[in-house]
Figure 1 (cartoon, rainbow, N blue to C red):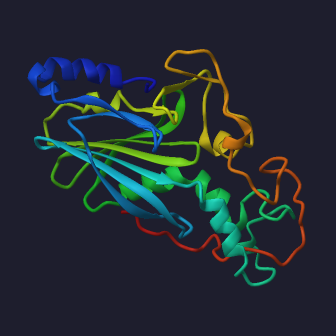
Figure 2: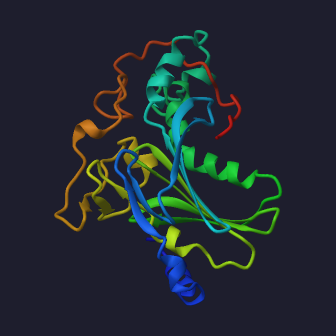
Length: 279
């Protein structure tokens, strides 16, 4: 769970909230989407499109549930198609345009990724945080690096225009972006039942906990192998090789020498491509 703060908040919530109010809550696991969290009843699920920082249209889902005046949402964005989309965009790029090739070292997409695809993945959490901060009338009161189940993420705390408060947690695991938001009216306790239950699950719904720090920017792109993890407290295991996103230009590793370093191939959107919208 989070390094500090949420355990204390959970204690405050247990003292401030009647027991009956907690009976509606349950832990929900979503193996298809790779996460688990407590919701106040079965959430509504909506398929949406997320426009990434470099203007890739990505499949996403919005999970939502209300508990009285409290609102809880989880947005899940699948960034796994981005490398393939960057490769397709490269076919339309003007010859020799560095701003769309996505390279600074002579390798075809070696560092930045074709169409800035790798940068899009690395910057996904920051982009999501920016979108939250830019909401009308919002004041950011806290933002810091934390982790849940040893998976890196950003903790956000916002005061909204109506003086309600949004407690957010943005994380990324195996190239899927997760945005957890609990919004409570002014004077309500922090939504600790929601926050403290965030976790990742495998394809069978088993709860994942890493033995060491997991950062998607490094491990999701397999620049290093992810650390060992346990599922439901079982023996340590590792992800199989076929679970990684593969870059056809760098079969030995994401930043290995390119098998095709010919110049004049690139991608269609550069560093100044602008930002897209969310939901």
